[in-house]
Length: 140
Image 1 (tube, one colour):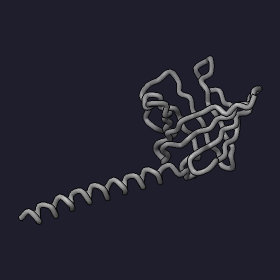
Image 2 (spheres, one colour; image 1 turned 180 degrees about the vertical axis):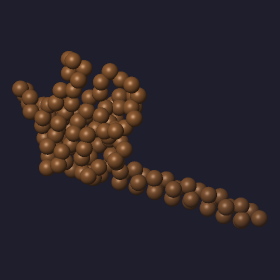
Image 3 (cartoon, helix red, strand yellow; image 1 turned 90 degrees about the vertical axis):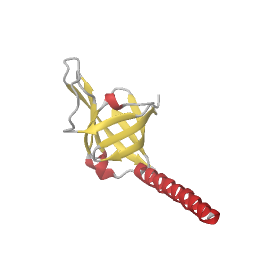
Image 4 (cartoon, helix red, strand yellow; image 1 turned 120 degrees about the vertical axis):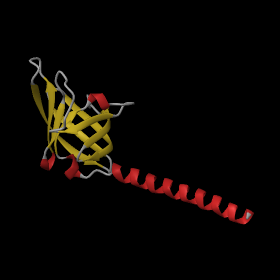
């Protein structure tokens, strides 16, 4: 009887450790950028930002009411448009470019009077959500 009890404890512990490994593998696979998921218009879902991680949702997402939303458009062949809230509450477009850097980073280069370069460290990316940490790489 004691032997059966020990066997059951071993099976339970083994099954939990196996499930944990699968979750870790899945989580690391989600970080790899699939450019087809990145392409298109995305808008800032500031309600979902948490602990320095910025959240964007695709065009057409049912956002709660807001007084404007920043956004961006990842175009094919490296083109990029950033949408800023204009003084008239519309959107003002800033042109730029983007390129993938490694498995989970995207470099944004904005064409303004001052050179603006940002790194987006992709935390999560699929057709429904884009989450990233942003850092400034300006070269002054």
